[in-house]
Every structure is written in C-alpha cells, then in structure tokens.
Amino acid sequence: MTTRRRFLASALAAPFIGCAYPALSQAAAKIVIAQPSAGFNYLPVYVARGMGLFRQEGLDVDAVVFERGASAALTAVLGGEASVYVGLPAVPLQARAKGQKTRIFGALYDQWGSEIVLSGEAAARAGLKPSMSNNEKAAVLRGLKIAVAGAGSITDLLVRHVAKFGGLDPERDVTIIPIGGGANMLAAFAQGKIDGYSLSSPTSTVGMATMGGANLFDFSRGEYEPLRGLLYTAVSARDEWLGAEGETAQRLLRALWRAQIAMRVRPEEAKASITESFSKIDKRVIDRAWDAIMPGFGASLAVEPNGIARNYDFLRTVRGETATSPIPDTYTNAIVEAVQPTL
Image (cartoon, rainbow, N blue to C red):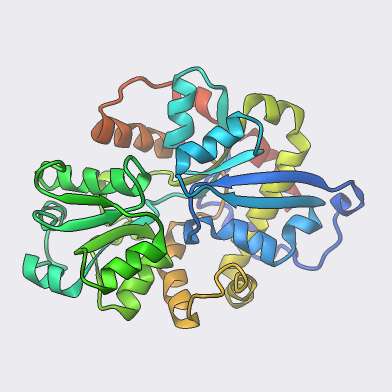
C-alpha cells in the first residue's frame, strides 16, 4: 500500500504540467463535486481546476458548495445529483453505518482543517498563552461567544469537542452562535458581537492577519492532540458509482494528486492558479493561509485506517455515536494504487 508520506521523493521529478495524456483524446466525463464549504482544505480541487489538470484528464468538473453543510453535500451524492463528496469522512461514515453504500477512495488532508479564532481582547481576557497545555487552552472558551456556520455543522462540532476537552459543558459554559458563512462571521467579529469564530482558512486567516485575532490551536500541525492525524478531507462516492465509473475515478484522483504535487514543488504557480477562486482575498492573506494549511497535506492520496478511526473517535465524543462499520469496509486504496504508476 502507498503511504501518505512515502511517495513525495519519487513524485518530485514527475513532469505533469503541459504534457499530453491519453485521456485528452477521450470524451470529456462530467463530474460534479459536492463540497460542504469553500476553504483551503480543498486546495487540490482549486489547483487542479486552475492549472487545467482536470481538462488534461478529459474531465468536465463542476465543484458545488453546499452552504447547509456536509450532510447536504453528501445527500446530493446519495441522490445522484453529484458524483463525489469531498469533505470530512465522518459524514459518509455515518451514512454507511446506516446502510448507505458510500466508500472513501482518496485522502486529501490529514489534519483537522478548521480553526477557532479568538479576538485579541477575548484572548487577553482569558489569559491565552502559547505555553498552556491543550486542556488549559480549551478551557479558555468558558464564557465566550463563538460563532459557527450552523447548528450541527462541522464547526459547531469542533467547538463542542474542544469545550468538552477543556472540562466545559458546551451547552452551559460556551455560547455557540450559528451565524452562517465566512462573511457573516467576519462582520460580527469586526463589530465585536462575538468573541471568536470557527471556520477554515482563508477566512480564519483574515481574522488573524487583519483583525488582531489569535488562533486557539494550530490544528494543521496536529497541536490539538485529540484530533491529531484525523483524516479531514477525503474523496467519497457511492459504491455503485465507483463500480460503473472506475476509470473516471482514476482520472479524477490523478488530477487531484498532480495538483497536490504542484502545491509542494511549484507553490507560486499553484497559488497563482487559485486567484480566480479567491479573488476577494488579499495576496498577503493567501500567502499566510497557504503556509499555515500546507503541513496537513500528505504526499499521497492513500487512505490510512488510523485517519478513519480518528473520525469514529470524534463522533463518539461529540455525538455519543458508537455504531460503526468495520474500517476496512469503509474505504479502498485500489484506485490510488492504479493511479500511482501513471503520475
């Protein structure tokens, strides 16, 4: 099996930009990617589109963001409105445990991808210091008003997880405010209506880079031990789709994998390719967000069982869910292994 960190050495020299591929002569295959949000933990999707890697694979890819969150995105896949789900595996894992035949077939980001940003005033009032233990940092949420995307959203579950880890009752000790997307969060943050918010970069980076905010944990570097090594962004589809569209799935993963390689070996070119997708974000914020998020991207798209096990641990903590499918039944690396020799 290809491991996440082993592949980079052989991939560095891979000539993948501007080359001709057999897929170019094939009919374009339509793929709709369902995403729960727009953020840098989906960077390979944006880079593959911006650098023309989907087109090189003969793919017509449309990435749709479902503002109602991960459950809505997965529902589109289960209903056949979208081809693949790209997001937190916990959601398709829950669906599989309930009888829906979904399967993870590629891993993109293997650390927690959202952040909790506190205002400078709230951080100072709570006495937040880098030298604090994880438990002490988590406990500073006591009495704070934290905005999340929606009730039951991934950002909501993260705040609850951290609060519990700090010995707090999320229902009584923290005021969790469902507020919608990044624009709403930043507006409320700037006006002092909230003490902090939870979302992924670059929205989290804007609060830190331009509004004096402080990051509670550096999740991308695994600082928050309970979620360290959790597979956060993965590619999933229905078993039926994978069986019928195996070649298309390979072409999709090959484009995403080449994008991930480009992010490491041609970072300036890769960053330039996402300008259209993040046109409203200042370049300095893009650079800072890029540097912050990159440690969580592995060198391979292979799925590792521990990353899935961490998702199950997360669900048990925040929702008390114990029903699981056997981990080997929830994913396949067959597509990754078929793609690797062709990079």
